[in-house]
Length: 279
Image (cartoon, rainbow, N blue to C red; front, side, top):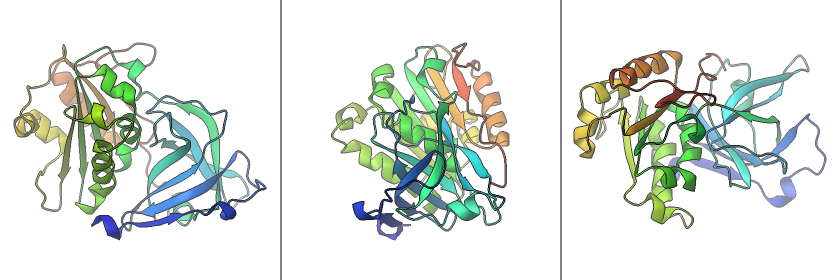
């Protein structure tokens, strides 16, 4: 997918409704369809909402039964952003995404303003490098963290490993990373610190293979020209399917890292709120 082939809709100010009709309603300001199965969207941010980059909230729409249909979504925008961004898969028969994928600027969604999550800096012990490990839409919390100045203040190096089946599915992350380098706020901080390692598993691309394989084989260290992972220097955050999370946890433990939490910071953390299917 080329940069031009992503279809984006942006709201005109006149399109934003003055009257809220949903509970905890926020207004959609932009929608981008990246592939037939992936889209991102931006919504207004409640003035009272405070969150740490990497956290998630419950968002959704009204179900056919008249009750709110909500799912956990990582906030893909950083904590300083005036709007909230989300990145979603489209499940044809999914109770929520079958409806959510049709939203347009000016529409409303439900947003419960109670952010939580484990993919936050406070849940990790201090270190020299941080690894963001994601498959598919699991890149969303790292889209937030990669745009947060605190990430570059805390670490000498930030490594974003993102794996999808096809090249087109990597496009959201690729454009985000490219944009960071010229970003007025953190462009200088990102330069020389952020290493981006996108891989595919089904379609040929410059880098192939699963994150677990590229870590255990040492390929990613060789390709990036960096030292292997150690518990003394490295910290990691993981976001993907239940199977992916378990496999990566085993690899990280093999490098000597231990799982942490908000209440007990350690060397790595895993987001477990997005392991369900059929969204």
